[in-house]
Image (cartoon, rainbow, N blue to C red; front, side, top):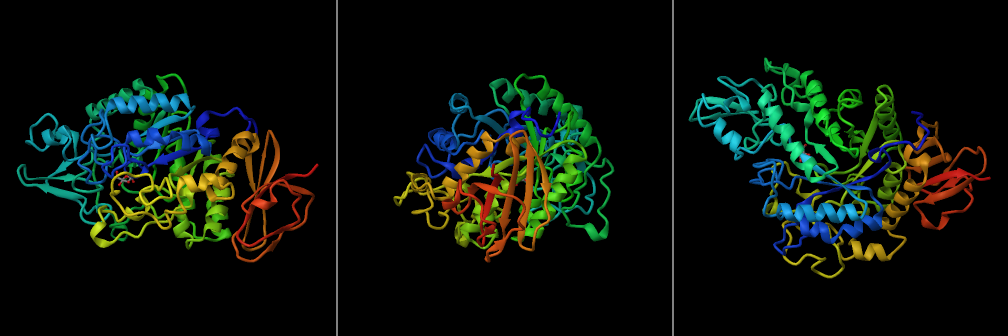
Length: 508
Ligand code: GLC
C-alpha cells in the first residue's frame, strides 16, 4: 500500500482520546468520575472531532494503583458503575461514531485477584504457578519507589515478583493456563463489542526464565526491563484472538522503552497494531529535540513498515503545557505538531482545554507514583462546582473558571477551538492523516516538515522561540491553519511570529 493513499484503517486515520475515568466526569455525585459521567459528556468528544476513546481501567480493583491493579477482569468496579452502564456507554458511543478501547492490564493482577489469593494459599495450590515465586529474590527493583521487585510471602516462605507495587504481582506468562485465561478476558470484552485495547506495559509479559540479576550499572534502571523474546510469540497469540473478530479491532501497546526500534519490534502484521512512541513526552521545549524525536520515530517505524502511536501527555506524566513552562502558546504549537505528524495521535483528556497540572497539597496526595497533579478533575463549567456535584477526589487544575469545557467551547479562539480546527482539518485532509512525512532543514528554533499525500503537499512550520522567524522563501503558500487565529486562509508572508505554528498548502 502506498504511504500516500487514504486506504488506511480507522486506527491509522483516527485520533484517540484518553479518559482517566476517576477524573473525567462524575454521574453519581460521589466526587469520583464514572461511566455515567463519560456518557453525559460524549457530545464533547463529538464536538471536538475525535474518533475513539480509551478508558483507563474500569475493572473491580482495590485501587492501590487506581485500577491498574485488577481484581476481576470481567466486571466493572462499583465506583465506576456496572456492566449495564458499560453496555449503555458502548451503544451511545457507537451511535455517535466513536470507537471504544479498554485498558487491558496483562502483566500483573491485584494481590486481591482470586488467582493470586489461591496462588499464595500454598506451594502446591494449582494456581501457584500462575505467578512467579522464588526461594531467593534477584536484584530487580520495582517502579514508583525503586524498592525491591520481590516481596516475601511469610506463610509459604517464598518471594513473589512484582515490577510495580507489592499489591501488583506479575503473572507467569510461561504458564499456558495464564495465557488462555488472558485470551478469554479479551474475548469477553470483544464479544461485548469493544473496538480494542490499550495494553498496559505489555513488553514486560515475557521475562527471561532464568531471572538473571541486572548488571551493576543497570540496577534500578527501567531501561529494557527484563524482556524476553517470548513476548513476541505471545503478542502473536494475542493478535490471533483479535483477528478472530470482524471490524478492525485494535491492540495498542504501551511498550515503555526508550529505543523506538525496540518499540517497533513489538508491532506489525501479526503483533500489536500500534504502539506508543514516548519520544515526544521526553523532548524538552526545543525545535531540535522535537526534530530528533520525530526523526527517531519515523526511522524506527518506516524500517518495519509499522504505524506509530503519538502522545504528548497521559495519566503517568506531567501535562505537556506544564512541562513546557505553563505557556498556553507553547501548548498550541505542540498540539499543531502532534496533530500533523504521521501516526495516530492520542490526546489526554483536558489537554484540549490547555489544562496544567494541579498543585496537590501533601495531605491530598494519594498516588504512590506521585502522579496526582496530572490526574486532576476536568472542569466542565465556569461555576464553582465546575459540573461536579460532590467535592472531587483531587483538587482542580489551575484557572478552572476559565479553563473549563463550556467556556472554551463558546470561544472559537480558545485552545479547545484550535484542537477542534486541527482535528477537523486532519480528518478532511488525506495528506495529513495518511501521507508521508519529510523533515526539512530549518534555521535554529524552527521545526519544519512536509506531508506528502493524496490531497497534495502540506507544510508545517513551528517556531519554538519567542522571536519572529523568517522562513526561507520557496514559493507561495497559503495558511490552512495558524495557532494565531487571525491568519487562517491568508497568504503566508514568510514570517512566523514567536511561539506560533502554521499548516500551509501551496497557493495556486
Ligand atoms: C502503566 C500505566 C501506569 C501503571 C503501570 C502499572 O505504565 O500507564 O499508570 O501504574 O502501568 O500498571
